[in-house]
Length: 176
Image (tube, rainbow, N blue to C red; front, side, top):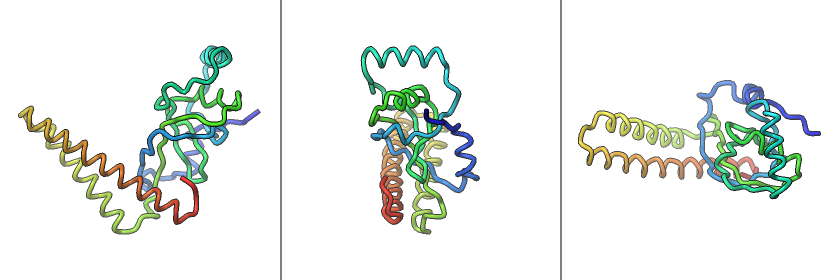
């Protein structure tokens, strides 16, 4: 029987200071449930029983992968961030090979070069400035243009962070 750790305990061991890391949304990814080592809360026995019965009757249904929220750790294992505790537990119990889940990772700031840090800061400052501008704008058309601009910049920022994350893992020689 697998022994589960609690997400908070694992994060306390790894991430001493959250300002030392930049969060990155990797999106929906295929994950081997055997690599999920931590749960974010205690399991509800009744909910577990209901889900277990559904899996036994219908097989594994990965209908809402965004509902399984995982954090990818530097050692390539995962912990449940928010939702999906019961599903992670049952996937392991049933020996399911892979699932789809929403994955977040962290980039250690000390692994970034000065140019990367400057680029990240520029994106963050631009996005923050536009959000403030949007809050004070009274013209609905201008607010819509600002929101569209925010969406475009946030998309470019996510793409940039994904590239940085991939580059870091290539240098480490690890799979992403």
